Image (tube, rainbow, N blue to C red):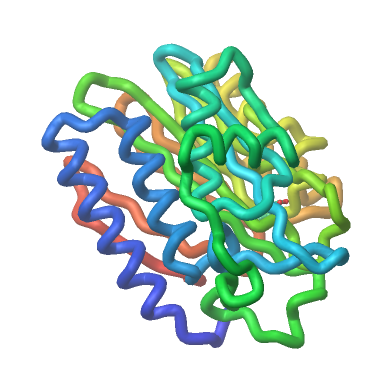
Length: 275
Ligand code: ASP
């Protein structure tokens, strides 16, 4: 929310972007780097994802996450998963170790346990309020998500998204973030991660709509503007981060603000929130 102090978040995003850049320069894949960045944001508790997530109306935390590799089109996702520290790593596990794209609920947790992913020992003590959210706001219609998009030195693109969902969501509610297509998309040309009101993002097509418009010849900027306008027309607000195969970075939103950072071969790391 504008007017609150997000300098700690900007510092964290700057650090993550810097570390992500050095991993990419050292030859890491875009897929590894987006998983790394999103997992860090889940673990730290500063964002509405992982540790910073709020309970649903039934009183417990359910999380959504997805990840996609552009070159292979391999993807993994978890929806309404309970009790894991890093949903994005479980999503990557679904990509790597199953023939499926998405696991949900009990089955997702059973998979995470079988594969040895970190579990939340005591949920009552674990979850914290993310930076900029106060206790009395927990059941208002606020929302947040973390996402990352990257292009690696081999020309591979990847995107990842993770969220605690909208605050005050119903038990079992799943938004756009774990959906390959609306919330997360990567192909040979573009990597996209969305945040915003999930119901409207899903109904606009979201990330894949941007990819299709770009494939049809639109610039990334025009494609983003058109999809954000459609989300607004449907009554929602959203933000999106995009990386293209030629290294163009676009970050746009029609929500109040969007905490974000970017770095590329041609521009130094830059992190900001509401301007
Ligand atoms: N898109 C997320 C959801 O609807 C929330 C957000 O990005 O703020 O679950």
